[in-house]
Length: 166
Image 1: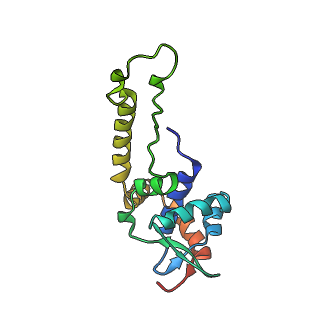
Image 2 (image 1 turned 30 degrees about the horizontal axis):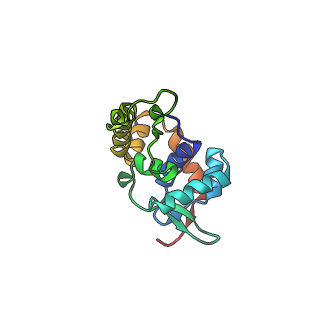
Image 3 (image 1 turned 45 degrees about the vertical axis):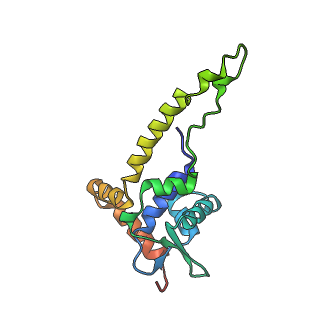
């Protein structure tokens, strides 16, 4: 299964926003600059994250984005579903019933075993993403960071974070 680039951008952006101070926001342009991605493409995903209740949007010239809830309350699945939608990755079109020499319809009374296997795998994948929070990701990153990653993010936030009332 392949996810769109928007998932990676969304997860990294939400992680970046978790480093904001109380009342701070970042613009879509700043998030795009930090990650070296297109602002217009990222903006589409930030809007989806806002619509899903993961991000708050602060309007106006000093506005931007911030987390709508604590990092421990945001799962990777929440972010993936906001960006990619909730439809299963595998969509069975029942091609087993097409083609020449059809067989009796009663042989198709049970769900397609390929579809069942794919949906079972997706349930496992989604369960793993659901139990991994943004806070977990931050803890894992801190365990391997020699300080360089944190320093880069802090330096960027120092310049680009906008202060607003909460």
